Length: 156
Image 1 (cartoon, rainbow, N blue to C red):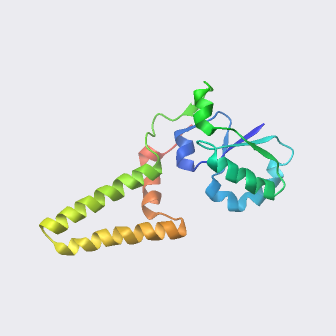
Image 2: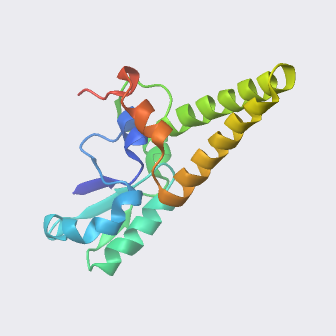
Image 3: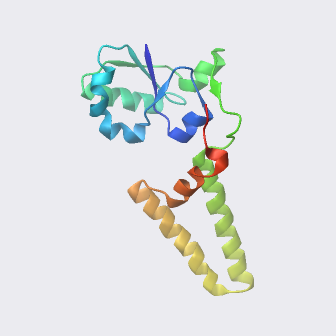
């Protein structure tokens, strides 16, 4: 059996099922290139709860690769007592780290603009533009920077 975990890399790095390979759903636009590797295998797709796995299953069906969804995802896997590979070093997902940094910066610049310098409101606008750009392009500069930080390096 070939288990494909379709969660984002940062989620996979924190915890995953033993032997699972990570192909994030966000990268499934290139799934056709994986077809030769997947053919002839019993493929099961998994995510956190099963929602993304169903989308992945549909995309795999589109390239004529039969796949089943692990019902309930990693949450069900763990609740049924199955083991996971857990990286103790990483405690927050990259997405949550970005949310914390962006939230803190907006609060900091808003307070500074109220107290001292109104032009610091431009900094909060710049943060908003960065978030909008990340949402539109799928590339987050802050996420890329945080991913390179030592606490986010995954070592097996």
